[in-house]
Image (tube, rainbow, N blue to C red):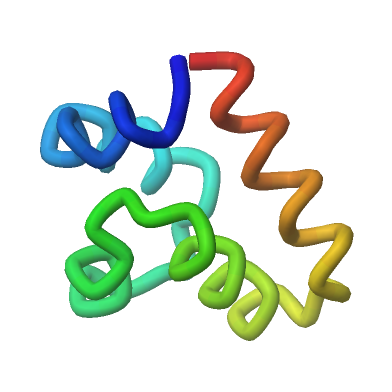
Length: 65
């Protein structure tokens, strides 16, 4: 699955993302809307990750979909 597909199916995939990153609020999920850079930024901020670590985590999640 690629990011265009994730953005297009965000409402269905958001539940899987919420299961992985449960501390992210509904408003933050809504602002991300499946966009990779938004999600990386939220994960980075919410979990105190370095940008590269957050990118790796988000990309790993995407590959497992």
